[in-house]
Amino acid sequence: MLPGCVPWPEEFARRYRARGYWQGISLFEMLRQAAARTPGKTALVDGDRRLTYAELVRNAEDLAAGLYELGLRPPDRVIFQLGNSLELAATFFALMRIGVIPVMALPAHRGGEIGHWVEHAGAVAHFVAAATPKFDCVAMARSVAVAHPLIRYVVTAGPEAEGVEALAALCSRGRQAGAQAALAALPDPAADGVALMLLSGGTTGMPKLIPRTHNDYVHVATRTGIVTGFGPDTVFLAVLPMAHNYTLCCPGMLGTLVHGGTVIISSDTTAEQVFSAIARERVTAIGATVPLVARWLDSDQFGRHDLCSLRVFINGGAKLPPELRRRVEERFQCEYQENFGTGEGLVCITPLGQPEPVRFLSSGRPISEGDEIKVIDERGNELAEGQIGELAARGPYTIRGYYSADAANRDAFTDDGFYRTGDVVRVVDGFIYLEGRRKDLINRGGEKISCEEVEDYILAHPKVMSVCVVAMPDAVFGEKACAFAILREGCELTLEELVAFLQQREIARFKLPERLEIVDEFPISAAGKVLRRELRERIAMQLQSERS
Ligand code: AMP
Image (cartoon, rainbow, N blue to C red):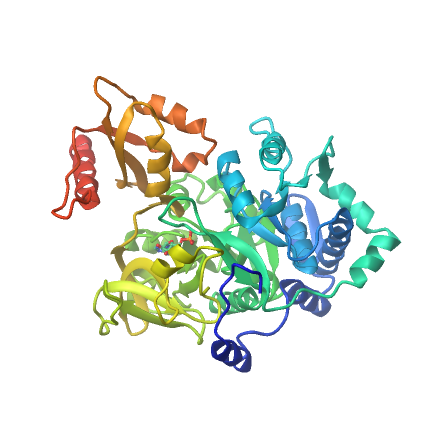
């Protein structure tokens, strides 16, 4: 295994293999096997571009050969920041073929965050989309490369430029005999090696890196697909960022492909575009998040598009209130599924055909027979069924440690190897009911914001003496960030001024606080800690009184 990663203990690995949770194949081999079954079937659709399974394998292999010839070698790490597109899929599988490990950044991330992961992962390349009039991601990648000489290659889905490689050109180069021969001599990566690194929705500072292996990810794709009823007739609409665990693999693109279905790729989340894509492509399954569900349910597009192909509507990333789950089933005329997942591994889903209380109230149950979950108190002691405590998980696809993060790992994992999710739950009859959260984390409609990370950025402002960032309730996103700040003497600060300052730090927009409360002091506990809960309650009450 890659140095810095924590492997499963041998006795667990043996058991996972013996029980078939780990199939011993790479993610590329998973695709290859699906393509061998139905080579001529459409695997991916992106606007008017379509790729069959055989074409996807061919494209990915050509690109793999081109990237190998360029100089990428296993187990190099690369920053992977492509938007939803055929290119994202082909590049992902190309990297899976040559054993190069993508760090799955999102299009929303900016240079400050990317630079951090370059250094932490030791990344040697940065893959970005094409520049657009709205945002020049190629210029961003160039300046990251200047600031971080570890980066040897910038690769774009757009046109070639000075010092910037184009995916299309690499694909052509990969088709040449020499490059093909070199690829043929390169074995598939080991199934128990690291395939990719996801970003944690972590609470402490910058997101940590989550190393996921081929074995574990093939298992998740297979199982989440089965629990969601995926098969060859599945047409999955991917509208959320495909580099995120949810839309990549839970079941997402990989869960569709492993079962021989078709993925419709889009990034337009407006009701009009989504509904017309469902009608045009006869979509059977869609994965959404809380803010999208609220927006779609409110739209005037019902009745204008034929949505009758839809069989399952999935929500993930944050909990959808029961009333909205009911409305989803009424308006979309299909079955609702709640999908409670973590980048660290554990995924729980409400299986199809469950009665209403489970579908509308629970966060589902673990997707694999190999999952072990327990509910623990603050000292780590296991609680009895039905009691409220922190959810902890261990199993064939839940990591045993973050990448190169010994100190964080001591807090995030129990001594017996369970990942502490930070989610406060009750478990009844094997189903999880979410009660709250232990972590200082804001869940903005599925996008996680680490309070500590944003506090660090704000503290750099010369007018700010002290700051505490908490979640405030929001009707559409569930939660948004509110910053309580104590200013230096004689200073004044507006939200606009603070936001302009934070934007210079090159961080993703979704992390910016959306309200600023100036205070003289924070409520403090007897032990001297800031009482975040009181601040959360204070802003919630204030918002309520402003509304009424
Ligand atoms: P991430 O690793 O970014 O996917 O974040 C994982 C966390 O998101 C979980 O620990 C939960 O706190 C939260 N989460 C994900 N899905 C759901 C859901 N369906 N309901 C409630 N919380 C969720």
